[in-house]
Length: 117
Image 1: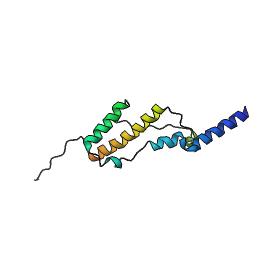
Image 2: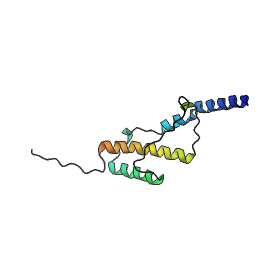
Image 3: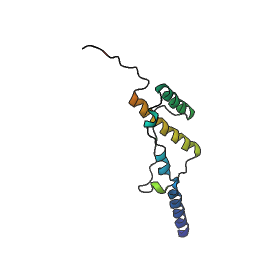
């Protein structure tokens, strides 16, 4: 029994260190919003809404992270299904798009400038 636990622990450590840990892959889903600043607002809104519809998510979806025991995050292998990984990746993209949309005030009416006091 003890030998089995040692082998299991070794396998978990090896799986986590091979670049496929849950924490590492979840971190990779987070993207910079700066890459979307050059995309016209109407195209960016359409792309975000398309991802939301494709993955059945809210347009304001935020990435979620697992909460492994303290210190074990890099050693827990990513056991999510392909569908879960794809959905989490889309959520990260949508969050980056939303940050760009908010920063540039896309989809909001433009303020009129007044020329007098």
